[in-house]
Structure formats: structure tokens, C-alpha cells
Length: 157
Length: 267
Ligand SMILES: Cc1cc2nc3c(=O)[nH]c(=O)nc-3n(C[C@H](O)[C@H](O)[C@H](O)COP(=O)(O)OP(=O)(O)OC[C@H]3O[C@@H](n4cnc5c(N)ncnc54)[C@H](O)[C@@H]3O)c2cc1C
Ligand code: FES
Ligand code: FES
Image (tube, rainbow over all chains, first blue to last red; front, side, top):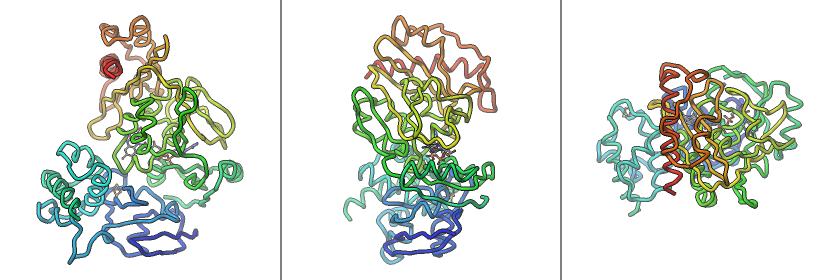
């Protein structure tokens, strides 16, 4: 077992974990933050994307112990049902989800895109930047619209 | 994933000591290749030596006529580096085209080179730019580093510390990605420095990255896309798989090389 301490959504947590515990597993099974999803076993789908020290990463391909000392933000940390993050609100308004399985990862990736590329995002940029997020339902069209709208809304936040 | 013991050394020296003490141990960098491999149980190291907290392994600087990049520098940081963008824009562009943003935020140059995936992007840059791999033990020239797919000159207990890239006068990378995986089906890095032109090909060789003698000979007299007209590359020794036959890859090499030369000249 190995000890790990990290800040998750603003709160410090310390735990003793088997070193092979993936960050996704740690968030879901130890902290019961089940908004982070696991959609594949091959590091390709992006359903598990969270932010570590402000950067998007695949939590299924990161060890929890490797995040010792880091600050982690999950989908639960960005908004509440009564007070959605502008990117969450944009996904709702633009019908950017159907089953919703990919949505937490899409939103965490989308916020990361805005952090790096700003609030005016063209369609091509959004599609290129969503390379690592797979959606089996929507056909992406409304996701792209939602990300563009969410990016603009974040400017006014 | 099978169980392993986890170590987080603070220095490269400690990492090397831990590697010596733990038979079957592996170094963990960004984990973007190693962890998926372990999840599939294709690798089962007894111990992981995480370089994440070891000092002095990340960062980018210009030293004389070289750009020196620390082994733990993430792909995203090379892609967005003002230093690399200024001195070797082709290298920044290459790093920005690896995988997807989340992979680029974790994956490292040292990990990519140590892994030497036959379709990885960085090996072509190291070979074409004639870079030097600096380890905790020695300096390894690019021409000696890559030794066939997934195999390198690294010895047991040897850790890549940094990579030194001579600044070329002209360079460009052109990748013909597999539409599903985005790994290179054929990727060509061309670099001109003084009177020498080097052309490195990834994604195509059944022994991994290699220099194309045909393309280099054609570009020797004149560094111009036209010099590659009519150049033929032999299919022998190239990969054939469900994505492309070796003949198709052989055809692609001069085509992609031509695009790379045109790109290098446009800068
Ligand atoms: C979805 C996806 C898409 C990808 N697409 C691409 C792509 O298009 N092009 C591309 O080139 N790559 C691609 N990759 C691979 C990615 O670039 C990896 O980051 C890289 O190959 C390995 O780097 P790492 O830092 O993650 O190394 P790790 O996975 O941590 O380690 C890889 C190997 O290198 C060894 N190692 C690591 N660091 C050192 C060191 N400093 N010294 C000695 N040995 C070391 C490890 O022991 C291990 O054997 C992709 C990966 C994923 C998951
Ligand atoms: S669950 Fe992490 S990429 Fe699919
Ligand atoms: S909404 Fe169902 S997978 Fe994207």
C-alpha cells in the first residue's frame, strides 16, 4: 500500500491505496465521485478526463499515487445542479448530449480547450481539440455547437 | 494490471539505484504507453520507479546551437514552447500532433524515445535532426540509439535525462496518420543543416524508424521538392498490415517527403 494526499475539488484527501489504483478508480470507488466515467480500456475515449493541476488528463491512464500533492478537479467540482458551470449549461441548451456517458469528459476537455485557446473557438479547432473524446450518440454536431457557446459564455463569467 | 511496488525518487541517481535494486523494475514517465500496456497485462513490472518528482528532468533551454529538452518534458509543453517554436518550429508542430490534448499533457519525450514505437513521431525528429540522447551514464548519438522496433541502445538501469537537438537551417515534419489511431502510417522528418540533409521515416519500417538513403541522395544536390520527382523507395523491409501494404507505404515515403520539403522551404 502507498499513501497519497491530493486536493480533490478543493478538499484535501489522504488515503492508503494499492499502487496500481488508477486515478479514475480512486475518484469513483474511494471518493464515490462517480461523475468521472470509464468508457474504454485503451486510453482512447476520454470519458475519464479530469483536470490535474489545471490540465486535462485521462484518469484511466494515470496512477492515483502519481497525483500525490496535486490538485484534481472533476465534473463534480465545476458546478452544482442549481448553479451549472457555463459549459454545462451550454451542453444542456444545445442538446450536446443524449445518453450522457461521454459528457463529463467532454465538458472537462472543453473547459481545458477554452483555458488554452480562448473564448472564440471555430468549428475546426473544436473538432481537432476533441480528438481524444469519443461520443457514440450525438454525431458530435451539437457537442461542437455547445463547446463554442460554452466558450463564449465562460468569457462573461 | 498486476501488482507492483511504487517508488517516487527525488533524483535521477536515486532512480538508478532503485532500478538496480529491483529486478524487473520499470521507469514510469507519463504512463501513456506503459500503463495501457500494463492494463492489458502485456507488461508486468515488479516495481515502478516514477520520475514525476525527480528533479531536473523537465524544461527546455537553448545551449549554444542546440535546443535541449528534459526527458520528462510533456508533449504539450514542447508544442507550446516559445523557444522550440522559434528555433525548431517543426519539432513544436510534431509534438502538437501527437495523440490528443490529454495524452500530450502527460506523455513525455523521454518516454516516447525509450519506447521507440515503430509508428511514434519523436524518433523521426531525433534521427533527422541528428540529436544526442543524454542519459545518466553517457551521450548516445541518434544514429546509434534506435535499434529496431521497441528497442534502443539503453542498457539496464539507464535513464534518459535530456535530448539535445542541433538547430537546423530548415526542417519540417509531415505525417500521414492512420485515420483511426492517428499514429503515423508514414511520417517523414526532413532536416537541412549546412550541406547535410537527413530524411527520417517513421511508421513504415518493419524495424522502426530509419533514414531513407534514396530521399537523402535525391536531396543532396538541391533541397527542393522537385528533387524527389521520380524517386523510388523499395518495399522490402517495410511494414505490411491491415492499414497499408508495404508497396503502398513505399509509394507514400517520397510523396510525404516531398510535402515535408515544401513545408520546410515555405518557412
Ligand atoms: C490515445 C493515445 C494516442 C497516442 N498517439 C500517439 C501518436 O500519435 N504519436 C506518438 O508518437 N505517440 C502517441 N502516443 C504515445 C504517447 O506519445 C506516449 O506518451 C509515449 O509513447 C510514451 O511516453 P510516456 O511519457 O507516456 O512514457 P511511459 O508510458 O511512462 O513509458 C514508456 C516506456 O519508456 C520507459 N521510459 C520512460 N521514460 C524514460 C526515461 N526517461 N528513461 C528511460 N526509460 C524511460 C518506460 O520504462 C516505458 O518502458 C499515444 C498514446 C495514447 C494513449
Ligand atoms: S476511460 Fe479513459 S480514455 Fe476511455
Ligand atoms: S451522449 Fe452518449 S456517448 Fe456521448
